[in-house]
Image (cartoon, rainbow, N blue to C red; front, top):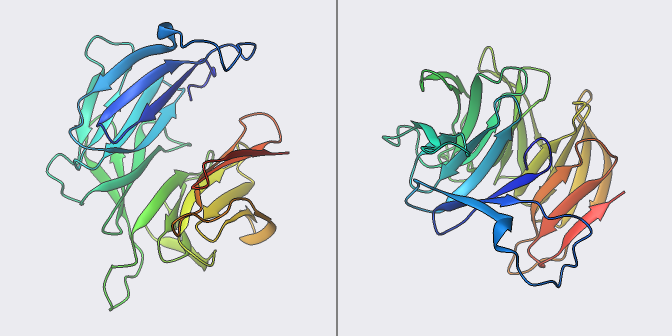
Length: 257
């Protein structure tokens, strides 16, 4: 969602990114579809779009795709795709992207092989590899489902298929904390706008709220039912109000106060 809340973006398995104008909250949801709700379509990827991130600093959009590329967009432009990263699949297939909160000239991307990389947006070069110790058994469970950047500190947080959440120092590339956070794969992460709390969602059906300072769980909510061994797909904080939201495999989106 754009910083002014007037547009939102969605990525699909059809390789496109759709750009939508948010309808008025007073609109009847059962009204006929208004074609002007769809503001545009961003086409460049050749396979499913796995992740999107928006920055209000320059109103730019990041996307990552199963085609191996990460792309930077300026949606209103005639040629909206500004830059492409990981074009040779150097790091594998990207699974998630985010702008670095305290340094908008950089972005961070996670990859299916378990690596996390910080890129310079201007030069397209990778500048820091965030490394965690890989067990000798290989990387089979090291798949990263989500990466988020702390809004004010040089810290990156990753959610893993092996139930871990890991914290990294962006300057040194070193892991600063790792914890088993759920009973099943950690699918989603969100940091509150003030940078005090981390929220995680998992296929164990729970949302957990963590104090970022102490790395302790301060609240747990059983939010969604399982469907085909999957549960929570995404979690989010409201940018200014005390609301959190989740989306699940049970076809429900929930808002908690």
